[in-house]
Length: 141
Image 1 (tube, helix red, strand yellow):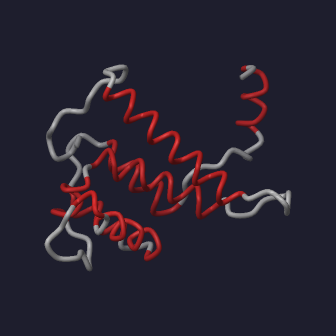
Image 2: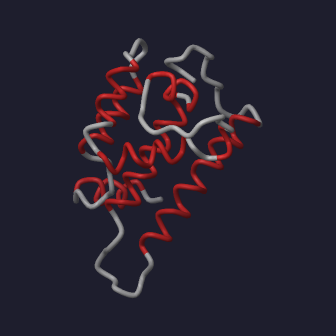
């Protein structure tokens, strides 16, 4: 992308970005020694976001013996901080950008596919060792 065009877009405030609880969770996930209880508390301020994280925690990927009904530090550890951060960003973009100027365009499908593609590319890059792998501490996983 042309750097001049990107600067114009950035200065127009039309680029999508997370807000509220999603932004705060992403900021917390970047901190080195974040208290997991603070992440849980922040997620719980946004019922929609908390519900999406619970839905993720109950997905077959995590093969839990019992369904998750509430967020806790243990749930955050099992999901992983990096995965949580990526998913919060994806949920935030999709929910905040379901409609736009063009009525015929499927914004929700566009953002869902874009988020899934970005997550897949990130994971593939880590798998191929094109990106550094985070350390295995609970704050970085």
